[in-house]
Image (cartoon, chains in turn green, purple):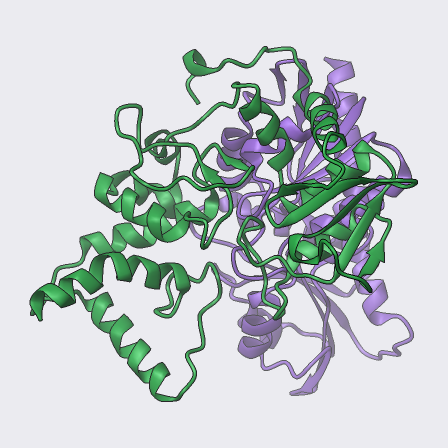
Amino acid sequence: MSEARSRRPEFENVAAGSREAFAAWVDGAPDGRVFGQVITRPAKPFGYSLRHTDDARAAGLRVSEDPRAAREIAKLTEGGDYRPLKSSPNLRRGWEIRVADARGLVTAMNYLYPAGVVHWYLNREGRLDLTSFRENAARQSGIYKRVQRLSDEGVQGAVLACCEDAVCLKKTLWDIDEDTPLEVDRGEGEIPCPEPCSIFVSFARRVRLFEREKDVDGLSPSEREDLSALIEAAATGEVGFAREAEFEQPLNERRMRYRRLTLVPKLRRNG
Amino acid sequence: MRALVIVGHGSHLNEDSSLPVYEHAGRIRETGEFDEVVECFWKEEPSMRHVLDTVESEEVYVVPAFISEGYFTQQVIPRELGLRGPVSRKGMKTVRYAGPLGNFEGMPDVILERTDDLMRAREVSGRTALVLLGHGTDLNKNSGGVVYLNAGRIRERGIYDLVEVGFLDQTPEIGRVVDGVEAENVILIPLFIAEGWHTRETIPEDLGLTGGVTVRDEKTIYYGAPVGTHPSMANLIAARARETMMEQHLV
């Protein structure tokens, strides 16, 4: 994060400020505010209610009065798969959390969308520090150091595959570097993304490995591997996807989204 | 106000990795010693990069839920949290960074509690060896050093006939240690933070373990859960933070 760009007053308690601002924002909308896939509204007499947006009017929900119950809710999808990225649009339904006050509201939100409230607040105030892909890559070490060599085109492709609203509900605010903006739809939601996350860096590493491959007869070895795996799986009548962040596996959704961008045009062109 | 931030490795692939961090945080929260207890991770959210923005307290204690001093505790965690040493000023916050858990003086007690839990109500005869199992790596000697350190501290107490060490990724290799140890009973305790691929799959497979208790070649091997998941680790984490307070008073 460049010091020169930081517009944050050094001695503000942003956590406390964001709690108050978020509660006031929710208080101002009796019908509720949508944050990611959560609708939250002031609810007398107990304070605030949080639900899945698709359950806004549902009855018979499992009610909890512990804001930390949000952690278990956020952990697994409806189908029982682990959710390594809390802003993926796969939050499960069927629950309601009732909290007494703003502190409980933000505690629950921080399990549903970690650091989402404070980023929302800072962004709204025009004071959210952004970290570009190149700044983020420059500090990587170990197995992630290779993302420093990812091309600009590779970053664009990785963002389209990894960060669009179809797979992540955050609004992507960072760019490739100060002079190279991302040419993507940055998303519609309320939760800002100020910096490439660890899931993105892991995916970027995978894309960098793709970039280093050499085509043989028009296809790279991993493209061949992915097509074979897809055909084999589809031939069984059921395509079982790899886990959400299992980017080394051919049938990973984000990996397939990247193939759609890069491999499908290549196949059509060659055909 | 005073906050404890526990840093875990976390995982992109399974929920086991972060579970002990959440559980220990919950236990420490219940004691009321800290106004805030917050979890953060390398591979999960909230990330180390952003966690401090979610903390309201001015006094912040960061304890890494890592066994060994090494790449993560010396390089990744300070870099990601923006720390400059044991004490860093960040705006209105004073952030004190504690060392890892494995070399802390309370660690042998947690290991022994784990062995007590494992061996409670079991009657054993003959010689008993405690074998501490570390991950180890040839890339960093500290990774293995902490396993030797704890073995030495437990050996001094004279509880077991033998206290040995073995590793997955450096010598002495764990399989050879278990096969070669001259005792009828072998208590095997992984010095790992969480259950995972190694503790559930590679270790039992490599050692031919059939469960918690495996009898073979006139040896009975008692395989314990990783030390990091023991409830007493919560006390160790809080004590680690407390020690950092004391050190600062001395300064």
